[in-house]
Image (tube, rainbow over the protein chains, first blue to last red):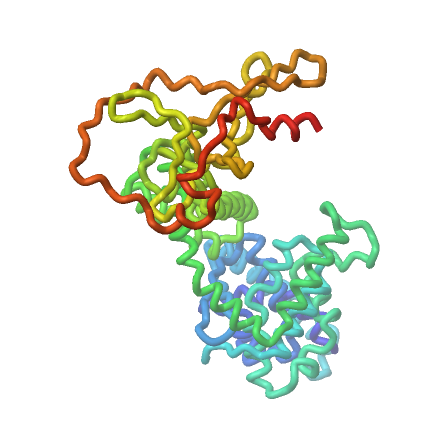
Length: 114
Length: 359
């Protein structure tokens, strides 16, 4: 199954979760998502998501100037983002439980893989 | 993580991505691509692949970026665009992207970005100076207050990209740049702001411009000179020379007529020496009034002695024991320039302005 389609629905949640642990700039967030197992995540999608969440008021942002190269733009979570994160987490958990229950009852003899 | 390093190919790729976003507003494009170069440079450094292999087609990358950011897909080329002068905006953006794709651009941009705080303080000083010039009051304290506000505005702008703030600050910056230009003009051309008639005693600004001829006293040109002898009696046909033997002649503008309220031209008439030369250093210059009574042909008047100014009566002078010797340089040179040349009475000679005027 193509995980990129699945990712589209949960990328906001994934990005919020990563940024909530520690502020990060674009590629840093991409790397943390990939090391967490979302290896198919597209970097442009993450950057776009970060900017959309920022525009929506869920993230703060600041620029870290660099002496040698281009500056980095960092994103951090704010109260509104945390509220969004907990709200979406509940939604996701319920959804995942539903899906797991559905798959377990539909194919009791088959091994359910991730 | 180390500091991101500028990568020419990444810079070019980001420029191409921006070009594919050019149907969006400037703010949106900035918002989407701010920091992108550092992110891509890190990704390249991480993977070791070339940007083209890693990110693929700039157009597809831009499409993914804007889609994830919740922006509409790119408008069809040539389709309707918002804002005025889309052609012009397109041209400007293409040119800017071309500059951004240059290898030297990151270094230049970062250097300029480093100077940002300098600009913040500079615009504060411009604002303080502007107030001082406009209202005549200003203080260092005012400048300090402005500086704090300006720096704080600059920092907020970096942190919050609120469109309203940005517009307000952009307008303020424009005003500051305008003030800077005015100040630059004032500094480079003081004569623009210090008129000759200001009564200043500074010889640089109160006198004639370099190369201007004639005789000047306190910033205004002398039209005529009225010499008196040591008994206070007015003299006529006095030839004046400077310490180098040069004739002290009336300037070009003193040779032009002055018009009175009746529209008559008041000419000054030079003396003529025995070789027929006009002599503008013989004082007082005589006057001639041409009456123009509306017939179109002015009738030249007869030169008459000029009336000495009533404000300057000749004084009685005590003879000095050792009179200074006249200049030995020039009066012995050309015969016509010599003070010893005889002057024909100008009343009987034909004044030359008549001839030129009648023509």
